[in-house]
Structure formats: C-alpha cells, structure tokens
Amino acid sequence: MAVNLRGKSYLKLLDFTPAEIRYLLDLSKDFKSMKRSGVPHKYLDGKNIVLLFEKTSTRTRCSFEVAGRDLGMGVTYLDPGSSQMGKKESIPDTARVLGRMYDGIEYRGYSQQLVEELARYAGVPVWNGLTDQFHPTQMLADLLTIEEKFGRLKGINFTYMGDARNNMGNSLMVACAKMGLNFTACAPEALFPAEELVETCRRIAAENGCTVTLTENVAEGTANADVIYTDIWVSMGEPEGVWAERIKLLTPYQVNAAAMRNAKDTAIFMHCLPSFHDTRTTIGADIAKKFGISEMEVTDEVFEGRQSVVFDEAENRMHTIKAVVYATLC
Ligand code: CP
Ligand code: NVA
Image 1: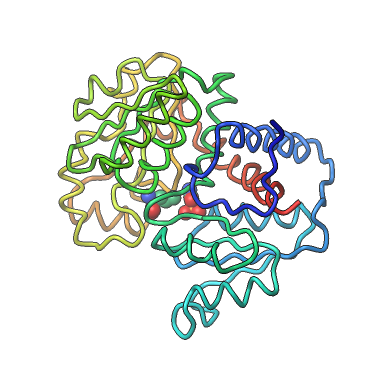
Image 2 (image 1 turned 180 degrees about the horizontal axis):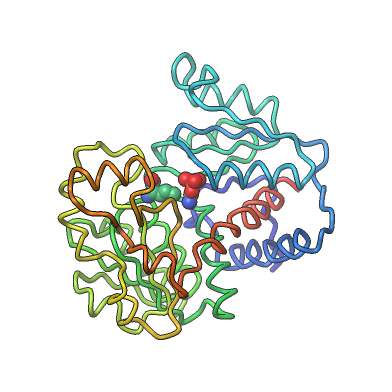
C-alpha cells in the first residue's frame, strides 16, 4: 500500500507502521545520495519551520537547520532565553501562535505529553526532537546506519547497555521491535524499561519475527551481538545528585574492550552522542575530580576504535530528519 505521511506529526515510533518507517529510511537514502552528489533539492521552497528547544542540542538543532535550508525553507530557532516560551507563555500557547506562521514545528523538551498536546493544537506537523521518554528522530539515523553497515535490519542482534529506561533505551526497543531486530537491554534491573512498554514491544516484536530480552548479565547480553549501543548515564533534566548512584549502578555496564570482544567480530559500536569517553568536557572533568573516573559509558579505546561508527550515525541525523520534514510537509 502507498505510504502518505503528509500532515502527520512525528512524535514517537509507536505511531508508525514498519512500512512507513521503511519509506522514511528509503527517502533518507535518496536525500543522502542527492546531498553527496550535489544535486539541489529545494522541494519545499517558500515554506518555513520553527525549532523550539527547551533543552540544549548540537546534532538535532543543526540537522533541522541544514535539512530545512537544503529543502529551500526558512528556519527559525527559539529557546527559552530568547523568546517568551516557558517563562511568559506556555508551550501550548506558543505552539498555537507559531502554527499560524509556520508550516511545521520541531520541539525538544521534557514531557512526551506536552509534545503530544502541541501536535493536537498546532494545526501543522510537529516533530519530536527529544523528550524524557522518546527520541524518535534519532531512531531513523540509527536504523539507517545499521542498514548501511550490514545491508539489512531483520535478524540483527542489537544490545543496548546502560540506562535502559531513558529516552534512548525506550526508543531503541520500539525501533528494533518494529523493524525486526532482536533487542537486548543489558542493564541493572533498577534501570530496565517500564513493564508496560516492554509488553507492548514484545507484542510488536512477535509480529515482526524478533525478540525483546532484558538481562542484568553482561556476558549473556553482549554475546553474539552485531551492535553494541550505549548512551550517557545521566540524561538532560535529571538532577546532579543522581550521578553517584548511576556511576555505581552502571559501571559494570560500561562498553569497553571486553564487552566488544564478547560480541561478534564484525560488531559495531553506536552512541547517539554526546558521550563522556574522556575528560575533555566540563562535566567529564568534574566527574573525574569527584569520582576518580576518566571514562563513563564507553571507554575512549572503544569510542575511537575501528568498530565505532558514531560519526556516520551523527551525519545520518541530518539525512533522516530531512526525510521526516519532507514526507510530512510535501
Ligand atoms: N543525539 C542528539 O540528539 O544530540 P543533540 O543532543 O546534540 O541534539
Ligand atoms: N539520554 C540523553 C540523550 C541525548 C541525545 C538525554 O536525554 O540527555
């Protein structure tokens, strides 16, 4: 059946069928090849989009900005420091105003409920640029990167190590279940994803011929993996005070040479970034001083090693975001 996403918001992958996700991945490949060969694609000339960021960003913001301009659109960036958003005007009020001026709205913030509410009121497509619960634009970049490296998605053994109940753990579990990858969350039980979402994903996985596994055992969780993925241990918006407990809980789940050795020889390492793999950041240096560790969720050796595909993955954010924007506005 033909896929038509025009006018639809992109809020979480649960709202999309495997055929729709496949369509977005194929479109991303087309845009990537056009960009690489210098073929202009200003298909949305004359349209305008606005990017609302309540949390900081490098990749997501720049991807929307470059994608928007490549498609011929005007792009406005707003954060709470340079607009009325949040302080003097609620997000739903802001969105209703912006929906009168723009053709689409990107929102990065805290609650998933809020981005869903925005989409109900805005009257134009809303794209979720990350909430505490989900990070759906990251998923397309991750799936595209895996497909580029292995030539397929179905049957890939995907292991996520670390905080498995954050936006990345949740989203990757959904993405794998939808697209036929065997998902393993390798994490302490305290940081397993919510049971209800696990059940939902197990039902979806059963329809797509794959599995969802949760394990605390690192040897079991990494054995036979094609992809080892991790994310930072403390996400944006979480209080500073959780660092000590997280470091204690997650140190056994650090992606290091031993974890990679236990996976397949052909395994790749992935990370949504930013990453604390050394002390060359203010937070990294601060944590080193307080806790005496110089690497966190991944060692510098793995991050910089031959199996790491993190910068291909980061580039793919732009091609895939372009596909989402185009498909929903064309
Ligand atoms: N991966 C990702 O979303 O990066 P930013 O926080 O820099 O946008
Ligand atoms: N879990 C991370 C993802 C960053 C892209 C965070 O929310 O900070």
